[in-house]
Length: 210
Length: 137
Image 1 (cartoon, rainbow over the protein chains, first blue to last red):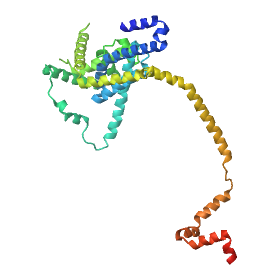
Image 2: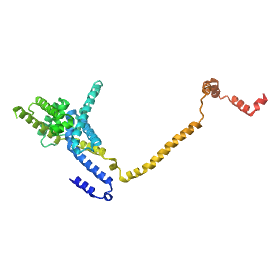
Image 3: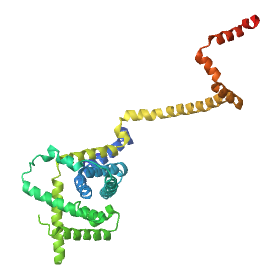
Image 4: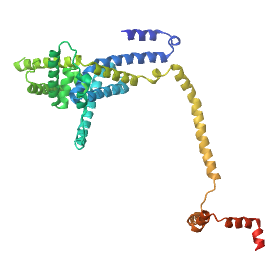
């Protein structure tokens, strides 16, 4: 609302007062940056969860989200804001797949090399990670964490397209059309992938009481 | 909706609760890193004119014709100067000179003279230039 008022005011001013097209362009760029900031802030946590479900590694998931943010900002910031969400999630999914492939290759190479501790063992020695939780309901929190771990483990067994369809619909709350746009496939394919994902997860997790 | 559909809906509801909870309880360290990543992306999206003060951009644009003319003059000078130097420098096209140089380098006797420091040879050579040695012998 505020942005539209500012733009309307600038449009109504004579060129000599508003400094010509330069100031107008600056105002437009500023409002676009604000809109991009709001969009990225609204998706970053869910995007991290989706990346983490695919990669099961904190730093890799953060890297994937950061790369997707950068690519969206560099290449598609001038697109209409309504296109950002499907574009962002398509970039993110491509990035996740790239990292999974790279990890597979790296795993094959590393299996031939004698190495010491890995990152997870380093985190186990981290005193901050070992500090007791200050959460007011630790038991419930623990149950949720366990449920999330089980769900992530089950998601890991799904084919990538099923996992993507399930997370975009369940976590991001996209409808079928948006999900189809983000996945670059038809709405019928989205419905099929989603249905199969739910069936596979139910078979693996059971009733999944929380 | 049949029984199977109801069970699926309940399952979906539960999974959504878990997913939403995991998002809501993302720890501060990860939130901070995501915030930094977002700020970096916004910097990358900003146009160059927003990064630099407008006066500096105007000055840079004003200097562009002058800089272009200077660059063109420099290129012309290099091309013409290169052609002049190309014609002015002597070009050794004979193969005999190269063989003479090899002979000089490979000549053991000349090297021995330099190493031994035989001063009598150089004194004789100077006397030859002055014309004194030739008259006495």
